[in-house]
Length: 188
Image (cartoon, rainbow, N blue to C red; front, side, top):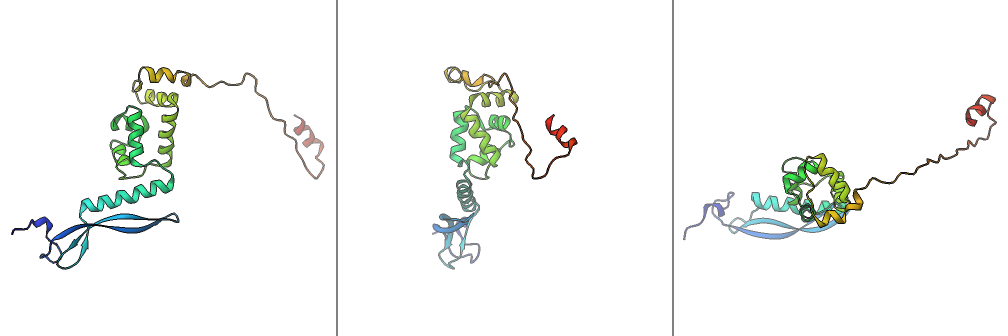
């Protein structure tokens, strides 16, 4: 029987690597959990090792855990939000920033988006006027169309500003008596 050379153990050169999934206890910011750990076990020498795909899977699981602890959107949530806004990954990068492949990396949990990026994504999803402004600044026409933008029409109005600005009155409290010059300044 012939064995595939990619399944041969690179350490002993005799055994075959068997894919395994174990549990790995991890801690981040005082929060602990057990994450799946992808690796291969040699049936001859017993060595444990991870190939590039297994290493990538392990890294993604850890980043997803860190995102959860930090209160950031998970990769799948970033994808759903982007799709809800009707953007491709390239368009999302133009609208929100982050670079050419940033959204692919966020969505696959290859990297964690910054807290600022996370807040911007949530804001755009909740406030169509903010999303509209970001699209216009990126040179994109409104991505949402028809009824969805009509429902958001009230959001695009400028915020109301009070016609008269009321100023707070400040009083200086001191245990010592102010000089005549200080009294004149405070009264102004």
